[in-house]
Length: 453
Ligand code: TYD
Ligand code: MG
Image (cartoon, rainbow, N blue to C red; front, side, top):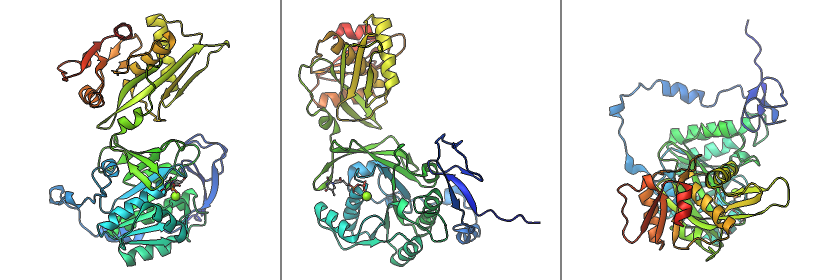
């Protein structure tokens, strides 16, 4: 006897965990009170096309022809690099980010560049009216006629339109506003978001349309129903940055067609997003001269070196428990490095408040920053400025040793480009390294580095 089919399920709105009964805490992501009852669609999306696909015989790997040149370049280098060289036909890309960070602006600019190359682009907005988009477009510049705009949230209609118009690139702004009638849940809920992405995936793969999906990030820092979305799409990009600072970072989190280590740097201006070709210069802008507690270090973002200023402020604490604060870097790492300074160098820092900041609002967790943080702390503690022509990088171990970091040469070359004269780096990274016009000082321990400076 066939069991009656269950038509409603409970879904965690944070991670998409499903359960047949309501739960107070999600076993998947430990969020509280995140379960919502949703109707589960009884028909499986794309079941028809799946049957069709199964009639096609499997293919030998060597018989698959690769058309590398098919990648569409947008002409926006920062974006192309993050995408792994350009937009792959039939790919599905998720662009996540906080509201107001500039996702719609970025994608509209991509539309403009693609449309200029006579590529047929369809921008579907569920959030803004045509007038609002027009106003935004007017700030950005002139648009060619191969861009069409469409304000719609019903996926059935969207699917029909895409099939009829046959665009090469489609933008969905945003996935949380889209809904499928057959799903009895509100737009933005896990089942709607999943269903909508499923439909778009079918369209992208079936018609070879490259699709960009905008996804809003919840206050916990994840796209609503993120796990559900992230594994369905080919590429996940996060657009981040301090809302009060003008620069924005586009970061690849998942990429089936390229490296995920790449970042793109943009600046938000009144005429839209402008690429920042030399982020180091941008990040060091406004560095104070001759101030204690400030040091320049070099971090690698994928294949690209980026110079950053680390600032530290160490002062005597008036309370029993000293305050420690790290912005832009890991708090626990800061505590660890201070413990190393206390134990291995003998600086009495346990009664001091310490604040560490990466200027410009960048967030970096790379271990090569360690030595920079340590030097900034020491400089502030002793109230002695570090020479402005010095750059410092290296990983610090628990016994106070300075360990090798990758790609030392690129880092040194970047520093040289911006006029730095002296580089303090791990001794073990020094082997075979020679850069003209740059004094390289290899150090083996934190004490060694302090002595050299
Ligand atoms: P938007 O792309 O609407 O953000 P999202 O789609 O991620 O929610 O970006 C909106 C912000 O960008 C808004 O605060 C105004 C700012 N902005 C500029 O500074 N210059 C511009 O040319 C445009 C179009 C927007
Ligand atoms: Mg938007």
